[in-house]
Length: 374
Image (cartoon, rainbow, N blue to C red; front, side, top):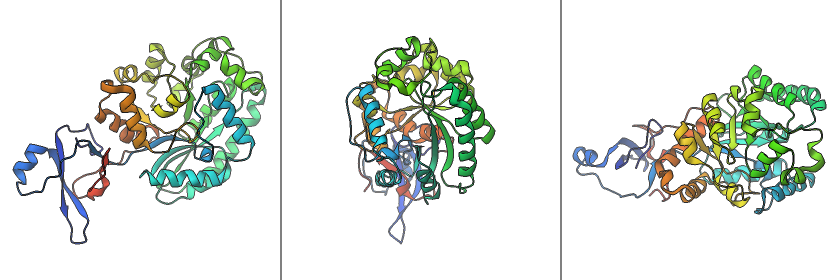
């Protein structure tokens, strides 16, 4: 099966390469295996059982958590561990450098990273041979603090935009989650993203406790966050419907996790044209439940893959995330569909053009998913 980054993956297909004098290989054609055999009867065949496709996009990372120990358990306990890790001062540029090295080692060159430190933002925007979006994260559940936080965010973003390089990483904005950002601040940040033409990414509907928090104001997540939520008040509805009512979905943010959703939530996301990022290994490690792949597929929602942080995933490889998604969803999601999510879905999540591989390109631009390229 071969996917060149355009259209759909071709089942029963092959890729034909020609050896160059310098030892490299040039892609000559992609097509049905039998057709290529007829056209090039003398070509040497190397059978593959997996999918050939362009490099994956890691659509959701927290590189500044790369020194945090892998901490499986309940989602609520993980939230507490992240808070403690942050208070320890271990988040920041050294951790992000370590994380980016791991991302590059996985063969990935395009990421969607959530940033909490200005030094990390400067680092990512200056990195050569790296694409994607660095989303500045904002947390502020107290509605009385919304104006101050919005003004500070505007000043930061305008400064960050002067650091952008053509063809490099873009600046984005990430209101952390519907329950950690007050309603007036969510509206203000959404309007700011529109005004500055910035991509948005939000953690939404990650766990059952999040839904309970929004509906009733109580539950395990409320206990875990405690006084950090301040004067935040529950909406009485699902996190997705809450964002829709505030007008946030109309800005087409990328929505990360989206595990605890119902059919109405999915319809709203589809109608708004939002892309969803699936993080199967993080979901499993934190007991968040199973991502409803079939619901989103039936609604025509584009799905990307992301690793989340090393606190909730064993590594930062979207190829391993693809393997995990195959295991979780079985026949409900074909290998080709999941490759599309990792490649084109990831590009859509970050508002980028997907990487494509065509005749005349280097053959090594195609990655063998699940087996090494020889």
